[in-house]
Length: 277
Image (cartoon, rainbow, N blue to C red; front, side, top):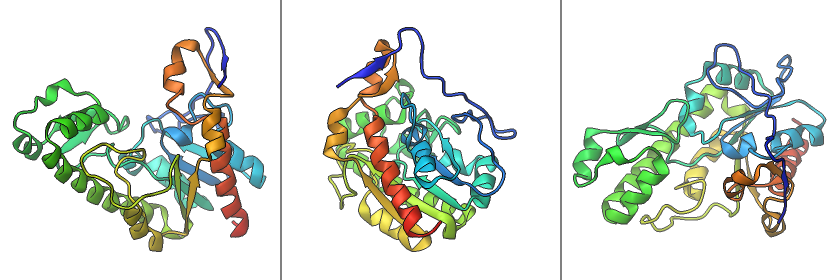
């Protein structure tokens, strides 16, 4: 597997902001007139270290504007809290919503940073009562915290996992309603297909905790669901074509490369063409 070593330079994401939003989106800043396709999602949508992430490839394939509203490590909360995102999504002709994991959102057990949803900011009294032996001051990120709970208190962790899954479905329904159900296309972008109920005792695979039954609860509420399962060939190519410094390679190896983004773009573009959007 290869990557482009840029030495001291890095990929220029040309960040910009929408209105008064405090979130920097990936540029170049698009023409927001008319009703483009918008892509809402997390790290995969943003496309770190990838020159042409899947929203850019969808634009090329459909010969129409496609706005990348990806936010690194985003959960559902960041999009519900940003009026500029919701406003643009509501007037878009289609809003492609990449399905996020269920760990990066505030819930009755813990809270996350409103814009950096992977940041754990505090445990609720309920959480402290359920996990009395845990010192939550040692955690700064949701994944680290949940991994520790899964290892130290697997049975109680399983209850928390179920709570997160239920909260995820409710939060996703709210996001869909605020955008407009008739224009939402849900995108599963992962290295595996959605599965049935998995063991509740481990973290599992990204998007964390999201099972097929959860997606099926949302299906009747949206225009469609696209499952972009990255091919074995694309996974084998790994970091090939990614643009990063050598010091960033360990991070890049955990992300999807250009070949995976091409798979996702092909699936989304095929749905758009088939439905005449």
